[in-house]
Length: 256
Image (cartoon, rainbow, N blue to C red; front, top):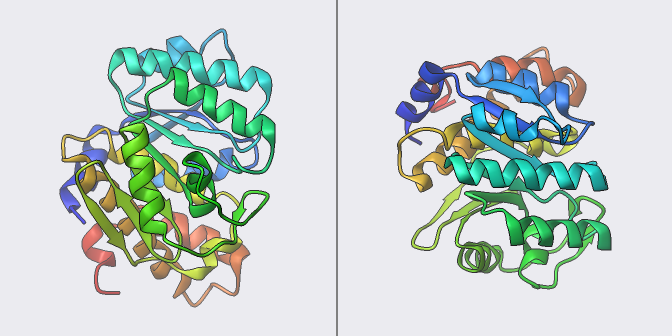
C-alpha cells in the first residue's frame, strides 16, 4: 500500500461521477466522503455528459440497471474517455440475466474502462470461464488468477477480482491482497463502495497497480479495524465504525 496515494486523494478531493445502483447510493456517498473524495450521483441522459466533463473519475455500476441507465452509462463513459479521466466498470450480476450480459458487452464495445472490478463469477463471465454464480453472488471455486489475467489481457485493462484474497492484474503485473473481514459479505454495497474508492485512487499520479492495490488493501484494513470495535455486534452496527475507519490515516490501520 502506498500511503501517498491516499494523501493525494485527500489533498485533491476528486469529484467522482457515479452511475451506480439505487440500493447503495447513500452508503457509497458517505463512504467516499469519509475516504476523501466527493461523490455525485447523476444518471439522467440529459446531464451525464456535462457531469462527466467536470468530474475527475467515473464509476459505472450496473447493480439496478435499466435500459435508460445503459444509454446514460455509455454517454458518460464516452465523455470520460474523451476527457481522459479514469473509468471503473463494476459489472454487478453480469451472469445473472441475458439483459445484464448484453448490456455489459455493449458498454465494453463502446467504453474503454481503466479498471474492471468484480467478484470471480462476474469477471469469469466476461471471459467465458465457467463459474457458479447465484444472482450477484459468486459461489464457484477455481483459478481466480487465470480469470484476472484473462480479463486484463482481453480488455487491456486492470482487473480487480474481489474475494477472500483480492487479485489485481494488469497486462504486465500481478498482485494479491489479503486484508479484509468476512463481515463485508453481509453488508449490501460493500463491493460497490470499494469501486468508488478505487475510482478515487485512480485519479492520482501513481502507477495503476499501486493505485489499485492501495484501494483494496486500505479498504480491507478499514474493515478489520471497524469489525474489532467493541460497539460492533453484527453487520448493522458495523457500518458506522467502518465509515469512520475509512477516514483514518493508513498508518493508523497498518499492523492492527
